[in-house]
Length: 570
Image 1: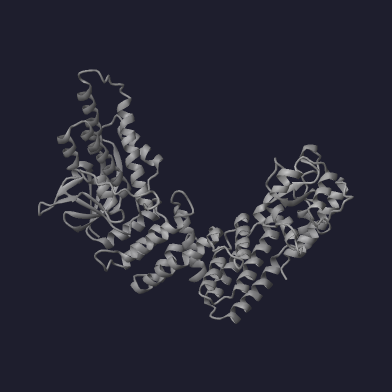
Image 2: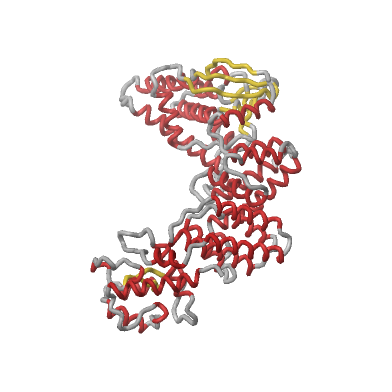
């Protein structure tokens, strides 16, 4: 491995060298805080030769090199230079603006214009909207812009604002005859600080060595995620075969953008989490720390295996999206129980079950698993964790993790319904051995409380009361979970010590609760509930129920027995 390492000023690198950012590198992703810190470190620093760390590149074909480490900083420097260029243009200094442009765009051996920094993933937005001397505005809506394009746009706007704020600090007199000259000099000072940035430039002679350095940097603690490394591995083994469209890069970006819909900004941990859960569901059981080495060992440098893995990974991401956001599932009568179960699991924040859920949904998508078995499988998981984690507050451990991962693998390998039914039967047997006892459940259930100041048990209580309510046949009122709210029979205003106990709570329609029950005393509440055909008996109430501490305790125990019966694994 031939390595050259030299101390350089950034202006030396931006004249005579062209930098390509390989497609296996991460998209531009700096947040406002990182940009502001970078700006302040450079511009506010009194030292004219500020050191920004090392940059690693490999020779593509001189003078073109590929950036391995430093692309985020190089991109930010290019954006800062573009903002300085725009400020010079704004001040009517075209020659100064063109001078800065020489560090953004240069001439190649054929004397043709070429951008100094050429990221593949942000083309053509970065080139047209930021690097080009006469920028071309694409008029894209925020909805149509990719994650990286949005980050680049936000960075450019922020840096232009930071430059304006910096110049404003000098409180220059706009009426002064020297105002314009002084302002121009201040912009020149910023330009000088940027161009004199110091770095260590490490140049390798081939991409293979650069790939090894890329992984080594990660092993030494650099901020590289598993998803960055997997992308690197896949795209390295899947060279672009089309002039106009990079299919592999497009597939990877579609995966990122799909999972990005879950948040306002990209959260790399979601992609990493998906890779971990997908691998444990479909390939082999591994740990987070061993995930990338395991993937690398399995896929190696086999293009066909990489291609199949990437295709399946992207196709299965719809199922993962359904787990993280059940509202993405088509809403119809058939899917209603499934959506409810997945939402309950989300509320309980149980992630160890994700590989199994993913494997189940993939099997259903392939039409191997029946709708009925799908519902039963996920409903069983929902009820188990309601008891285990929701009511009894037990911690999940290695036994459950192993059970879920092994069952996920079995489901993934199953080719027919008979095999899946057998897997489900064995899975239930294993869960029963781990499940909480009835006595433990009742003991913890009776301790559940909720009021305006104590909402920790709210979701568990609502689920419990809904389970009772939903089991009543021929309900003459709406029992949509989202339409129901928790009502205190003995009002919260009494501040009685037992007022918040689950034995004093029931579910009613939000309209009835907000408009009619809210300000009534207990006797009038019970009367109104009867008038609205509320099933008092099934909810362990009657017209003579007085709400004493003893009655609340009795009702709490009755509810506990009923809910245990309805959620027990049979």
